[in-house]
Length: 348
Image: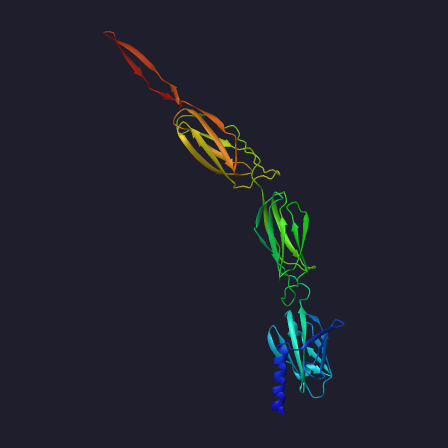
């Protein structure tokens, strides 16, 4: 007889795992009728919060001890007799810590029935850290960064779809924007648009009061509105040695943000000695270029490019480097003369 009972239980387990049962909903509970012509009936809630005990009321048993097998994401577990008391099966919170579907298969003698429950994630806990990318965006109101976050309960279960998850963005001027979203497919994702003031925007997640670490996104200036060149610092002579400094005026974007230090600026030169370029970077919103005099006199043209914006060209006159050319003429007789030129003196 014991061998027969074990065989019957094994068949009942197989039938329960295959869900060959009739599942009925009644008053928020899940009521299950026996899978064959038996009088075993189970009543249990349709869902239970993660970590809470799951209680199943058993009625109609013909006598004998109840045997219970629980099937979940972690595998299969047979309950101890202590978990079955006076027609109530208690599945401990240890077995409901992982969200998902649990199925309990209850056997009494030759009767068996199965009932299922959805384990849902509990409230979010602190530790929700947003992931942002890209980590910099142009401060023009048109660019944006994508922020994702996974809100979890105390057991590490992701919150269910529809759970609200917001991002708080503290802007460079101190104002705080709240961008709303919700969980979908195990995570929440949202776009955070840039403002028009350059600086650091700090992002933090708010999931029903639970939060986590902050991340920073840099809002950077856009290209300059214009590039204006100041007058050169000195005149040039065609000596190949003298130097002049050409600088830009303060460079700002269309929202008045000063360009960041280190922004690359290129000066393109065209003069008597040919073409050339000089590279510089901005400091305090300005770029400076040291221009070397050519070896020939003429006009040197300078045009500066910053982030695709070109200045109007300026012209620098390059004077000849000869300060004095002494010429002496001496008659030597016979209608002939000696002409002496020099020494040729420069401005030095």
